[in-house]
Length: 312
Image (tube, rainbow, N blue to C red):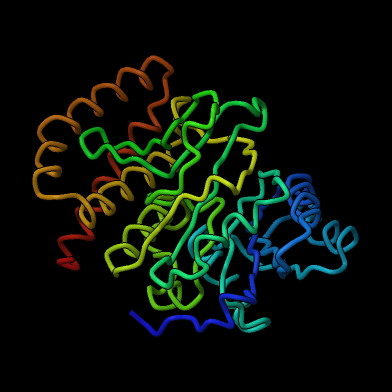
C-alpha cells in the first residue's frame, strides 16, 4: 500500500465530487441542486460533460456559478470520463477523496458525511458506498449493500434489490461497491490507475475497481447512513440493442476472466453460457431483435480474439 493519509487530512478532508453527464441537462441540474443543499462537510463540485449537445454546460454555469463545469468535445465513456474528471479535480484542488456520483440521484443531507465517516481513524478503508432507494418508490431499496455477483449466470444484482427498507441493511459492512454513489481515497484511486478503460463505454468498471481495491489490501465498506434516491433507467430485462449487447458480452468475459475462480468459470461455460444463450435467443427472437443476438455473438468473438492476440 502507499503511505496512509495523515491525521490532519482525516480531520479536515478535502472532497471533490465528480459528476459525469451526457445529454441529460435536467438531471444534471437536479443532482447539483440536491448536492449543494448539503451543509457539510465542505466539498468541491466538478461536472464533467461528456460531449453533450443539449446546452447542459451553459445551463449549469448559469444556475450554479460556484461549481466547475468542464465540457469535453466527445463522449469518452464512463471509465475514461471519470478518470479524466478525477485527473482534472486532482490538478485543481488536490483533494484527499473523490466522490463519484451519477447524475440521476437525489441526496439526503447526511450523504457526504455518511460516506466519509468510515474513513476516519481507519486507514485501511479505501472506498465507501451509499444506500440507494428508488426515486419513484422512496421506501424501496435499489441497493442496500453493493453488488452481488452470480458468475454462473453472468449477473450483477444489488443487495436488497426491490425490498422495502425496514432498516434491515443499516449496518456498516464490507461490500463490492457500485460506482454511482461512492467515495474513494484519492491516493488509492491513483495507485490503482483509476477505472479500467477496457470497460468503456460502460460497465462493469465499478465492480472491477472495487475488487481490485480489495485485492490490493484495502477495505470497501457499505455506509448506510449515506442515503440517495436513484432514478433507475437501465435496460436490464427489457431487451438489448446490438451495440449494448456487444459491449455487455465482451465486458462480462473480461470481468469473469479477471475475477472468477477456475471453478466458477467452468460452471459458467458448462451451464450458465448455454442457458443464457438459449434464454436470450428466445426472448429477443420473439421480439424480432436479431441485432441483440448478433451483438452478443460479436462481443464474445471480440473478447476471445483479443485474448488470443494479447495472451492476457
